[in-house]
Length: 337
Image (cartoon, rainbow, N blue to C red):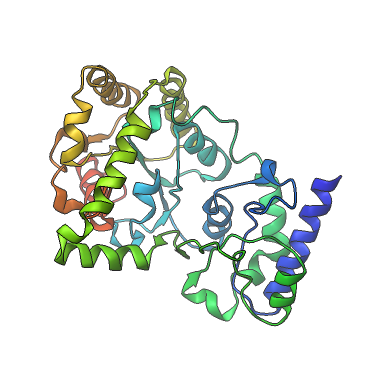
């Protein structure tokens, strides 16, 4: 009952926001704990991207984790791509996204990485896109107006916030409902699905000119990755099965595809060579190659050079690095051209 009421109120406020000319926003959670919205919580792009891809012409999807999200679709050759990547993507989330949204004949670019397979860090999840029916209702009621406001010809502004009288008043005044006090807005999402983080790119440019000045940030992110992702690693047998489910779905939907095994920064390679990780690292690469055709394994060290990654963040390669790998793989297997 309350769930239905909250959803209806949300759609009404979204519609009013659109009529007032405010930028598109999505309820993602209740940061201050005022409402019980945990069961309705989504990473922001998991709601916005399904709506955008219905309105944005495309014949190809880029799917993967945060490493994929910053790839510029226009830099991908031979197809009109939409960046459907989302943070924290796992094989089951990718399978569920394809099941809910991939149209027959669409070219699919899948990017898998070793981090995805760690159940100790990312437990198995239920269907992340089971609300696709509600998303369709949202699109029908508010989507066209929300995405055709004057601001939206360039970029979709994505923020976290709670619906309340304050945000409603701002919407009616034609202002963008912002995040709660003390919360930072999410990076911008282009209409083609690309996450554009201007601050991150600007900071990286500073780090290129002054690497020692960013060494502390680099070390912090490196330590977080090593301890958080590799401190305890439980290789997921279920996700190997999910690879095969994705392969069957691609075949049933007649979806041409390529699969990228993501590279790792040179500084991570010694970690992956540890006695407790090396066999699982080798198995991951073998399982992906055995589950799919048209696989490009970029984890062989050919894309390990630090210049291909953010200077301060060894976990994420640069957007142009991602586009280069996608183009090489599409060309190698003759997909999409």
